[in-house]
Length: 305
Image (cartoon, rainbow, N blue to C red; front, side):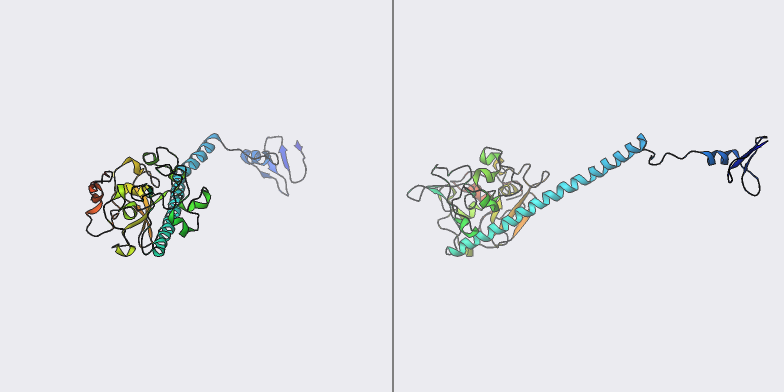
């Protein structure tokens, strides 16, 4: 007995043989029969991921993130260092402009008594920037910052935002210099210094010459330090106040931004990368600072002298 279905369907034979509908009956295998009768999933439903597939995807994403994050962090660090270098270049040019306006003399900013003879100084942070949190060593109010004039800033200003050119984006403080972990810009008013050996050499605790230096007296102007960020001292001198360890710009090796007397700036990476803090050709390298009878002893790294 044969049970008739719709046209183009299957017909079932009493003997258990299956045939496809059509002009001629053709045998159909059991496998094809099951395939033809298999239900399709309901519309809108999709097969989900297995646990193994999800774990594989998560592992791949984690691996990619581990590879990319250091690169992104390095890019941000280089961007901040580039901004710092641009600031140093502008500050070096402004310091040169000051010299041109003042008979070729570099600026000197000291905390002097009324006689003008006995003066006290910082390590060069007092030449540009804002008032900062700390007054002059004598306590007689904030510093008068002479190079601010050439930057279009008031010489005495309580406005940190107006003097942001003096803030290095990498400034994370110098506990040995300020006694606090707040940024040097916040405490002293500037992340950067005018080379104090160049500017303050004939005064009191820095005294090692009897006269000011003219810009025209400087030899090898492309290698003599004019302006630098605070940690640049640590490329040459071994002292906690330099904050070179771990440093502002690089956690693995000494690095600093330095501006030179000719007005250009460089990102310097290496111990002893800077030796030209002195201005005159016969100075015996960085060690000459240690020989100043009235100056604090700055220890020079071996190989930097």
